[in-house]
Length: 199
Image (cartoon, rainbow, N blue to C red; front, top):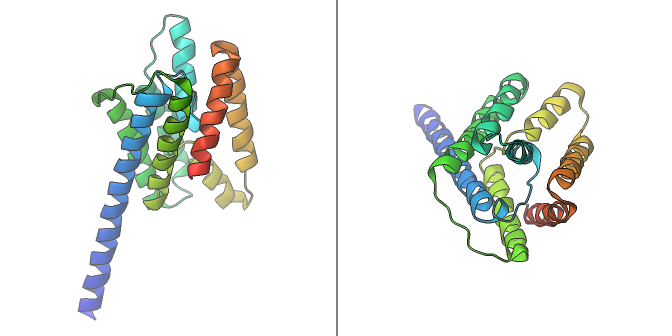
């Protein structure tokens, strides 16, 4: 009996460590996509990371520097705390680790731009960003943000709000189009489409 319990505990520890590695790898991929492809091409990602980028863009236009890394934490942390009570604690911890790592990696990792061609940045950046999402899912986590809210509402009401999440992303793109140009917004739609196809 003790052997079985020990074996079970070892499996649980291994799975948790594997999940942590997946989450860190996910954050690395997402950071790489943002720094090497998306940001140099002026593209907008979805979710709270997209909102953080949009706030940074609007701030820059008014000579106010608002780091994307800081905004990712400021936007995600309150939602993680509020929603974490009603969803899996393990899921909340791992997802919080993911966005915290992205925030840290954006500051400390010097990823450089690879391409000047916009379409290459869109396609490869979207694919790498999508792989980052896949890595988080494999680790039984997410990239935070709207995933927290969607799961919270689902657990509380039994209803899906993914249609509202889609509308939220559309609103982000519309605002981004107004402030950065509709061409960049259109490119961002293609990039997001590529990333969802990878997932």
